[in-house]
Length: 497
Length: 67
Image 1 (tube, chains in turn red, yellow):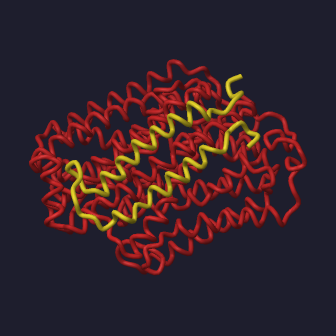
Image 2 (tube, chains in turn red, purple; image 1 turned 30 degrees about the vertical axis):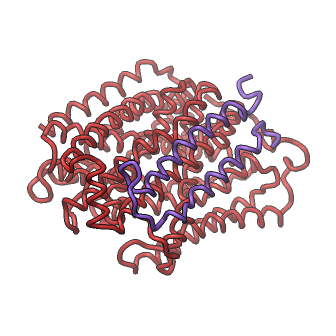
Image 3 (cartoon, chains in turn blue, orange; image 1 turned 90 degrees about the horizontal axis):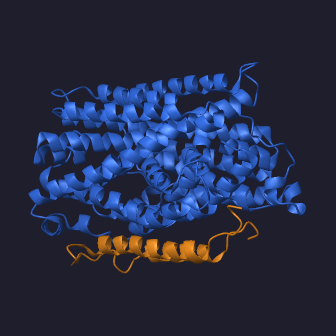
């Protein structure tokens, strides 16, 4: 039954994605940005769906199972607070410049703003490298979920089938329908997830006598999980995790969605509704994860959320949850691979003329092949990676958060220079690699020196410092001499479709 | 900022970051409205953030964007 519900859902997603292709106008801008035609409702659902990954659903609940309700603050309310302001400042400004100059990717924006090819290439390389672990958590999460839903390790379907199914379905509709299909499917998937999430939540909590009863038991059986703690570790953790949602402003797939908006007004609903929608997704995920501790003793052999559903509900509900989990995963995966395809097509193939005499539509095929290779790499990695989804996701988000100073300065600080931006990116990459290497020798959750301070708490300030110092030590760009940065250096529009 | 965005929403964001650090409640185990007090606080913070953002959109919308 679980598989039947899941197969029906995947077919529906595929059908909607392929239907989106019927409105395809045959241009690169239409493929990658849906001709900048996305309205407020689809935009808000897409932005939410894109940000709602396996990290939110499986990762957060798994972490809450270990650490309790603090996970809601560490990533839920901090996201609710900071992401809408990034949409307000970075999203609207990116949309404005993107429409004016025909940008499709962040690298185009950076290249045009600083007039530096090598800086664009550096940003491309770092973003692509960080996308691998971020994309990997979705692929791995789908495999883990399907395995548990069908009977668990050994008895159920092997995880690689779920991973492969998600990769294949997503790749087909993204390749065929581009941004329009991705946005439509995202809106559908976010709706499905919210509806099924509420249903699953009610079903599970009723088994514990309701939310209040479950929380009362959690407080008495595991008191540490019902509070945040008051030591220095908690303080450093809360302070540094606060910076993690800054990753959103540097996501290439969010940038693409910002540029797909029909008008600036389309952002209004997203900005206001975002905190409420984030709370509506993180609250059930975290509370169910924490309540899972009342039913299952560690160590677990799969995602706690899926195990709760399987143990406390019927097969149809379990199938619906599977669809909801897959919806959450695919609604991010599709945007991620579309933006990767856009970046490879625009920033490498077209920029360096690798497509030769091929037209823009044919050049898109290079992007599709690149995405196929990237997905294949993520799939293979998912077979061997043993780190938790939360840990993997946190590392990816940390790297993206370190890129935020450069992208914010690109949009708002006239005095920023290419040297300053390059210094900031190098500092981010170097510190990230150093901390990651350091974490390999640590068992359990990693913080710097075991103090509670997360790497993001060092990387973001240091990246910002490198940007400022590097910029002030180098010659001011043309823009700082009185011309707005979006007009300098004077280059032709990138609208080449 | 001459890009059309007013500065005061930044102060709203910083105020939100300050309110995020509810250290006076961190070790509190009480339930409020059926959920742990810290969880209730951060859930309320999300609602307050939505109200503040509605004000930002209403009174702090950058000019000349759709022209």
